[in-house]
Length: 409
Image (tube, rainbow, N blue to C red):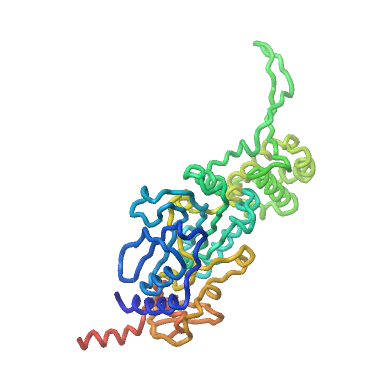
């Protein structure tokens, strides 16, 4: 164990002596698992009969990471999964900033803001609006690291297997969404023409628009189509091309033509729920935008392996994340809107006492209402030092002093 780990261990011990993590519902049916500063494996297949037992273990052993099972078992401490006796599992949605596009160029704070936004969209648009869960049935937790978890514990989902949970992931992410199902063709005979071989019937293939009483993806796409139409009718064609990259190569004349058509017909489009009054080129343009631009924007982010796994271990609320020193914090949906982990998930047990650290790179940090500009050998309050060392932005102590010690020995 190096000096960084010893420093974190001391801080974690102070926290766990004063706090017992929140026990999940039916906790005696849950498996627990832990990682430690001086071990390289996960100690799992553990169970606790009450809060006091858990507190004694964590205060004595001081884990670096703490987990509990999303599943319920008849024998949670059985040494093999087959012996445990699976009884059901929570429905879990995990969003982590490492999945964000461009995460490598974001600061920690920027990643947290973006992933928080995605969790709000997941909860509001999909879990509540589309899947019908009530707000009090969705238990949100800041992971202590770079993301959020949403737990659903309603009785009707406990028995779902992995295939059914994958279907929920596909629905949320829009995986396999068929644009011809959303905007199907309506084939109508328009005329008949005599030919040398008989009579040929001309068929018009016009796109239908989902009705206002649709649900799920059809309703989301209908509402988004309204936004697209209004953007083109009320805005500038150049701005429209910037907003919807899928039509980047489209001729401006095509867009101006579509704009004029839509200005005349946008009221009828959503009254009649059809694009029949538009030219084929305009219909194709709208469907292209909906498929390539809007569907990805409407989709939610979910870590599929986590949701599909019915025997998952997940962060224990009230424990500390070993790579940040931040508390795994349960929050309500309303609290999520303004939740800032660097202000609100810092344990009170961490002090303001200055700690010597050596920064591995220069950086700015806003934490607990304080702003820090950090570089080289410097000092920071204990609470900031714990975070910086846990995230490997800094090392404990001054590098120059460590070099002197090495020369002495």
